[in-house]
Length: 531
Image (cartoon, rainbow, N blue to C red):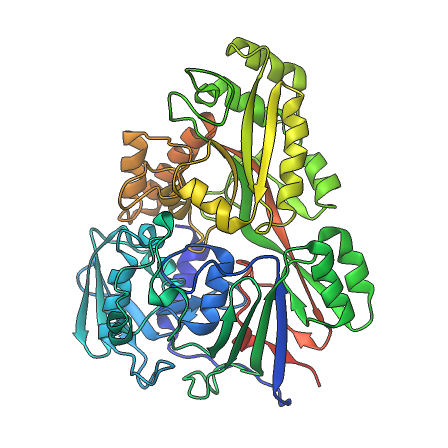
């Protein structure tokens, strides 16, 4: 754990309340757009950025990150380790009501955390170290981990609280089973404690929220937005046109080719910042044969020489310059600099060398190359399909003929979760700002508690044990040594093909005061407007 993480945790644990300077303005409707919609309203069913973004307006966790990325109190007012180093105690905020009028108590917190630990939850890896969640009294909850876990609070910032009675009455105790096309009442209905309440929702078309008149945070947050009209607009040209024409007030993903035009238009501005997210390709290296290629009886991706040749063929700086118009940070590792475990050495990437990559391919027995399908989203990351198109040409130079299958994220992500893709794009943010989060989801073997996004099928018992040990290792030096060893293995095995860290470009009317949040999570209760 870095000193930065330690200080964040200490500050958060000591902070019981905070004040926000507000301005006095008229009620404001915010018309908000981005490329893709939330995948579900069930707050434990998907671990996906835009899904969390909408959920954060409606639901809350015990803790949250503010617009600077710092941990602050939410439904817990303070938290600390008890005399038992394996037990964290959370004191809950009193007087909080769900949108339906129900009181928030420890019963709801215990129920919500245990729901998030269920097999169909996409959030369970974040709670993999949790042994038990117990009610102490109506406003106190203990979370016991299998060993001392100093980073537990970092894993709770996207862990949303639901009302036990409402959820149970609507037969939704189990989170939506996304992998098998499951449905439940929470997929389309909400009852949170957040600053905004659902008015109406048409998935992929429009969602309308209104300010919660009984929100506990009055006086704590600006709360100047009184209505939110959220419209997903997948097409980049249409989305920026909506901003330029005044049809929308705020978009999270200004197309890189339109940044100068949007920033130069009177009445608009573009706010930029590095994002806590890396874009990369995953490869099925674990199966003995794969279906997405033209090689019979074996898997070319199982050979590390092929994976390294593909890594060497990708020209990250060309992608940065041509596809991203300079709005990316090329990298050789699947974590951004925000994250504990990142080093400049890990982030170094090879200079493209087609001759050397071809020699590696020949040495692996693929002098004539092979064909393979690349699955790519077209509405999730900045220029996602264009990045994939660029990679198609680059890999073709070493004989890897790539057939691109680009589709919306709602169809793309299940391919990874269900292990139905052999070569795919994925982007990964790191909300706890620690490598353990990446390892739990992307490196550990796929089990009932770990590895749910490990589409590589990589499995290494020694590495699995090291990953699990991170949750309870309190010696910072030993923990960081374990992190380093895991990253050395990930890099030497070339589990993934890192491309770049994203740079965020939020476009908005110039009377909006709103800094870019490093996780791309706009919490609209913080937004203010100039007179």
